[in-house]
Amino acid sequence: MDSRLPREVWVLVAASFLIAIGFGLIGPALPEFAQSFDVGITAAAVVVSAFAFVRLLFAPVSGRLVSRFGERPIYLWGLSIVAASTVAAAFATDYVQLLLLRAAGGVGSTMFTVSAMGLLIRISPADLRGRAAGLWSTSFLLGGIAGPLLGSALVSVSLRAPFLAYGAALVVTTAFVWWQLRDSALAAPLSETQALELTLRAALRHPTYRAVLTASLASGWVVFGVRMSVVPLFVSSVLHRSATVTGLSMAVFAAANAAVLQLSGRFADRRGRKPAAVAGLTVLTAGTLLMAVSHDLPLFLTAVAVTGVGCGSFTPSQSAAVGDILGSTARGGTVLAAYQMMSDVGAVIGPFVAGTLAERFSYGVSLTVTAAVSALAAAAWSLAEETRPTTTLTTDAETSNSARTTTVATDAEISYAARTTTVATDAEVPYSARTTTPSSSL
Image 1 (tube, rainbow, N blue to C red):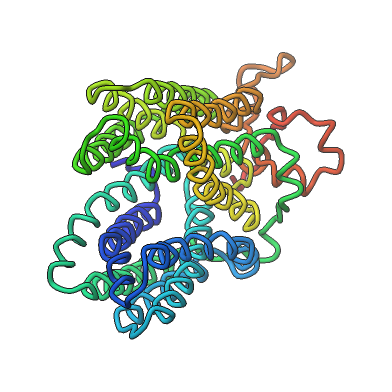
Image 2: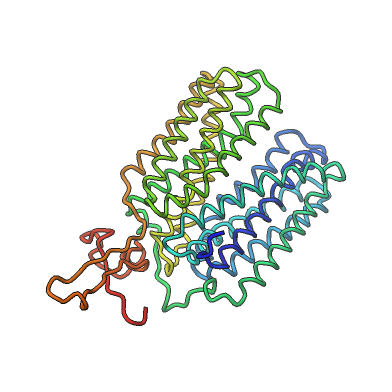
C-alpha cells in the first residue's frame, strides 16, 4: 500500500471492487432470466445491450451533471439508481419491465462512472495519478473475476437471486462511500471561486487528449468488444476448442492485465504518460497480430497473455493524462464523459466490424484490422505531448548560495484547464514551460 495516497483513493478503490463483483454477479443470469419470459435469443441480447446503449446516450448528460453539482453527489446518486433498478429487476414480471429497468441502470452506471473518474483525478496527488489509476483498474478487474464465479453459484438457487445480491451490494457500497467521504475536504465539491471550467472544445485542441480518445476507442474496440464477442468464435471455429478454452483465455488475459497494472502506473508516474501509453498500445497491437496467425492453443494463449500485458500497460497512463490535462481544480464533466463514450463506441462498433470481416473474409483479416485500430492509437500517442507534472530547480546566478530561488511547476499551472482558462494567448505558450515560484502560503 502506498502511504502517500489519500484515504479517499482507497475508499474509491474498495468501492470499485464491490461494484465490479456485483456487476459480475448478474452476468451469468441476465440472458437466461430474459429468456424465462418466453422471448428469443435476439430479445435476450437486447436486454444485455440496452444497458450499454443507454450508458452511451446518457454520458454527455452525466458529464454536465458532474460539472454542475460535483463528483461526490452524482457518484452517490448513480449508485443509488443502479441499486434501485437492479432490486426492482429481481421482481420483474415481464420482459418489458426487465428491459426498462436495465436501461434505467445504464443511466445510473454512467453517472457513477464519470463522477468516479473525476473524483479520482481530483483527490489523487499529481505525481501519483498513474498509481491511483492502476489501483482503481486492478480493483475493478479483480472484482470482475470474482463476480461471475459467485453469480454462477447464485443462479443455481434462483435466476432472481443474483439481482437481489447485486442490489444489496450496491446499497452497502453507497452507504460505505457516503460514510467515508461525507466529511472529506478533498472530496467536497469545488466552490464557484475555486473551480475552473474546461470545455470539450478546448480539450480537443490538446494533442494528448485527442490521443487519449483514440486509445479509448481502441480499448473499447479490442479489449471490450472483439475480445468478448469475436475471440470466442475464433476459439470454436479456428482452434476447434470448447467454451472451456474461451474461459481459460479470459482468465489468462485478466491475470496478465492485473500483473502489470501497478507496475505500469508507477512507470507512468516516474517516466511519463507518453512512453507507457505508446509501449502498451504497441504490445497490444503485437498480441492481436499474433492472435491473427494463431492456429494452435499454446500460440493462442501466448497471444492472449501479450494482449493482456499491453492493455494493462497503457490503461493507467490514460487516466493519468486526463488528470494532468484537467488538473485538480477544474470542472470537466463533459471531457470525462467523452473519454468514457469513446470506449463504449469502440465496444459497440468493434464487434460489428470484426464480425463482418470474419464472416466475409477470415478471422485473420478481422484480427489484423483490429490490430490496426490499436496501432492507430499508438501512432496518435507518439505525436502527443508529455503531460506528467515536473519539478524544476533553477538558481539565480546573480545571488549568493543562500539566496537561491527554487522554481516549481505546480499542478494547477501545468494543467491544460488552468492555462486555457486563465491565459488568452495559450497557443503561444509552450505547454510544459510554465513555472512559478510558490508563495509562502504553499
